[in-house]
Length: 270
Image (tube, rainbow, N blue to C red; front, side, top):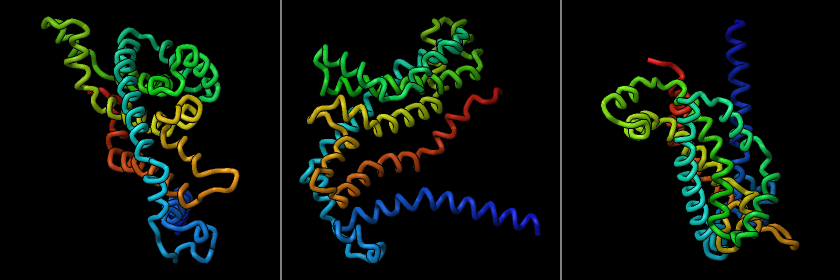
């Protein structure tokens, strides 16, 4: 009896947590297909006449396809840049026992993003980069890079060096062994780093709000176009939120096993 009560209580708690996460998302998806009057009408919470007008506003009137392209370009490039720089850095900190360097690099990750905006804006304004893709890419890569280093350094700390040492005995240099032996073996960690970095860059709001221009604006910042002094276009705002949220939800849903595999890979030897 006691075991049954414990099981029921655990199930109830899990259900409450799941509902707490799902309920706002469900409301957002439903609201994206309602007009503004239906969104604010409690009697039409579930039963309503769906409309695609909000998505027409998002893609045609507000040109969210261009902002979508910007988000993909900036997120993809900053993720690639973070991997290219962060992976060798993580390997060096792991193989040469530079654990203190990892902690120093992670300091950039725990700094509040808002505290970086003024220095970034000042630097980029001096070289004429405010409102450019370069500014957005470098800013997001700077914050996601420590995460790449932390994940990959932990991976390399547990990865046996014997295979790369054998490759160096066969004639490869340290860098050649890294490229031909270590990098293929660290695919799970690279996948995890890439996915998490991409999601972070995709959701970067403050950087886009301050550093982006009209032509380089990403989708999170573009959502402000649905808010004005006259009111809020809730239908368009919810449709834009769906367009922003759906890609990262699909990435997390279909690639979650790679994320878990990367975070747990290398925790045991052998």
